[in-house]
Length: 445
Image (cartoon, rainbow, N blue to C red):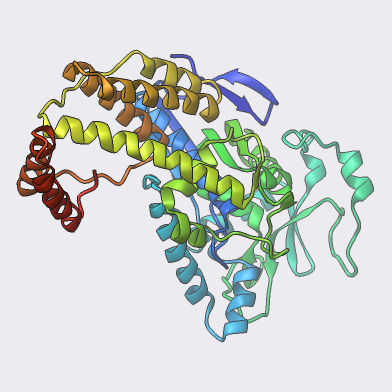
């Protein structure tokens, strides 16, 4: 099945051709762990998990890495404010992030590198850039010479002349050029510092991902992803360093998701208008938060409102209810099988067309309607119902949506069957008693 991907590097919808047949290498920029993850931060988490799941379903071997930036000025500032070390802050928010990751139903990636575990490689990488003349030591920092990269601006579609007109040399800056960016900064603050040939300090943000990708993948990769806000300058500067070091743009396909706004305004920790993902999960559940994200095409912005999340909650109830109904029917009739329906091909066809989740969801909802018709039929076709269930389950597995349905124990199954028999025999008094017992056992029906 042909896969089409919108490549941010070319601004075109392209056929996906991996570097190695039936293998995918993918790196997604992870969080800077100085605070909790808001729902906008969670969008790439969920979206690229879906990409991961889809490729796995299609039979690809996927190597998926996503990092932690666990040293940064914001982390150090928070540590100083609280009177603790930077590791305490980063560890706290890594643990919180991984709880959100799990609650959102995301699969564990292949690798979760941390900047602090990659420091030797970062120092070597910067040294190599200096040796090649792409970087220089000046004042208290090491800078990258942007103008040595003729292709600079290739990702963000910006020209050097335009960037220059908007750039300013900072007071007392030791840059050769206002466009140059920091690779290593000498520091004497209270934060962690590392010895290097360029002095005691720590790396600049833009170098870290380049090094972690090199360290894990040992060369160019298929997909580099993240939110749209990282396209410039972060990803542009990654590409510049990679062109200087490896003569490649890191990835053949750059994929960026759009942001989530809050009541029409950009959601930002600095602005304070954020919806913490952990709070949304606590109130609505991880699956509703996930469904909010995948119900919209990844390249379209989402305007978060209370009305929208309540609407999504209603949609989730339909999915959860349909799954429960068909699962319980097959369970009580011992009628499971391994077949699927042709509509699954329609569902997957939508997803391989630039991960079109809204169209895939339309197919899913149609399938749910079909399931309800099958279950209401007087003469039920158990084989068809079982195939419909397997199809539904496969769709939900690819989307990462997991209904809260637990198999019945033998005792619970006996009680439910007795309740059904009592209803069928119009023994309503007995049925009421058994229904009460079902509720006491906490059985979802």
